[in-house]
Length: 313
Image (tube, rainbow, N blue to C red; front, side, top):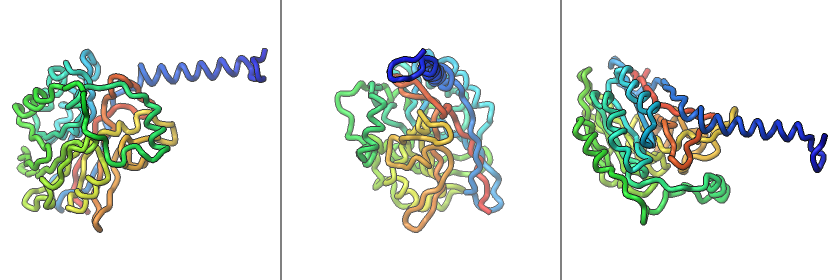
């Protein structure tokens, strides 16, 4: 039997079944398929002992996400030397206690953090197709979004106080240092979220700290203006999140959008960035969550990353 326009009914049914299966997987399976990415980055001085850095990002916690909370708590078993949180912890105005409880075991380790826009403001529904339209028009992500107006206020102050009370270092347009159990000292420079134009590089400019064993740059959204500045200032490694790795990817092709002005080839994982005649390593986390209004992932599972920082050859 054939449907109108000569398309076999069996073929039509097959396409619909495949689409339904893919949607079910993207909604019910992959967003809970948490995994750990492992990479090695040669950024330490010759002869220095390796360091284990755990990066967590884009948790987007919604109250009641028990599997995500259990997985986050389990990451403490990795025994990292230090932890960097690159923002967007919240997707629920009531979720601060669950974020702090989930990260509690990790807050026993030295750590530092920056915030993303979703830490400051409650989520809003946004048609995912707009990302593709704006990309095609060359408009999306060129400079970040205008400051948010008339948005729901998230209790980010409570989140900050919880991190600070555990001894984590806030890097909101600021510098800080971590003294590790290994005896090594890490100098950190961070920015507030460029996606909502809260970054103020002039407040932290001046280059990496030569007095530390290692200097790192930290930011939520990897906009090119920020990557250029950090790289020109000789930071050997930049850590970022925000992109969700593309979130909805095409198998064997990759991401379609990045939600900022970085190219899709560097939407997640380890790469390099060049500016001012210098080169820095860049690691972009695909994150372990999604906005509560688009709680789907496809060909881009949620993740945290354990970076082994090793001596440069």
